[in-house]
Amino acid sequence: MTVDIRPLVPADVDAVVELWREAGLIRAWNDPREDIRRARAVWPDLLLVAEHDGAVVGSVMAGYDGHRGWLYYLASARAGVGRALVAEAERRLIALGCPKVMLMVRPDNAGVLGYYDLLGYEREGVLVAGKRLIPDTPPPPRENPRRR
Ligand SMILES: CC(C)(COP(=O)(O)OP(=O)(O)OC[C@H]1O[C@@H](n2cnc3c(N)ncnc32)[C@H](O)[C@@H]1OP(=O)(O)O)[C@@H](O)C(=O)NCCC(=O)NCCS
Image 1 (cartoon, rainbow, N blue to C red):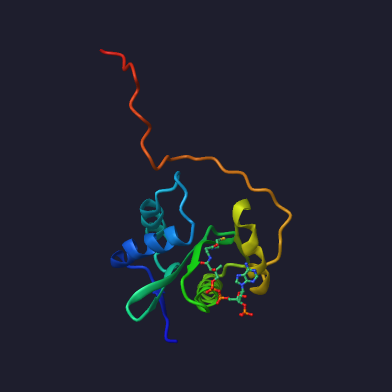
Image 2 (image 1 turned 45 degrees about the vertical axis):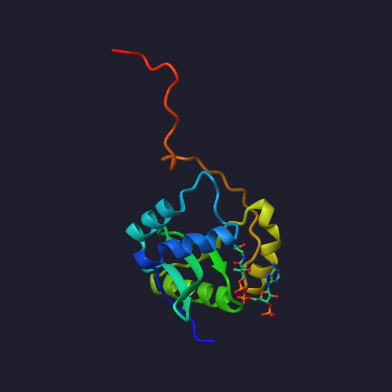
């Protein structure tokens, strides 16, 4: 199997969004196209796709915040691709001097932790908290806007 792992380019976006949809990675509050746009604006070389026979068969979004590296949106439609994507993301993070890589798993996807065990990822005793700063979807219009 020849799989090319390379940074995402704009022509990949539709296929990557479809891959994420099929992999169950899309949440209503995250616009995947905005996620791609923002990631490419910061780390264009860390948002990777796997291509086989001209088709996108995998993706991973990595990032480095100066303290930890992070992996998001790992998806594979072909055996072997997930592992290859993680290895390439790790290689690129190491090249940036990133000392440790982390990832988050949603509770409804906890079964995938066994996969990360295989890849050498240890369970961490941390709870994660988040706060939305920029909503992806505009709020609905006010019902009774005050006239000036
Ligand atoms: C998880 C995922 C990326 C794995 O990709 P893949 O290319 O199929 O996996 P790889 O070929 O790299 O690795 C396959 C190995 O992992 C093992 N494996 C796969 N899922 C596993 C799991 N949930 N628990 C334990 N082992 C698992 C396979 O048995 C196989 O083992 P082997 O090499 O000894 O035969 C893919 O199934 C996927 O896209 N899942 C949906 C999206 C998702 O949940 N992403 C993670 C978000 S945190």
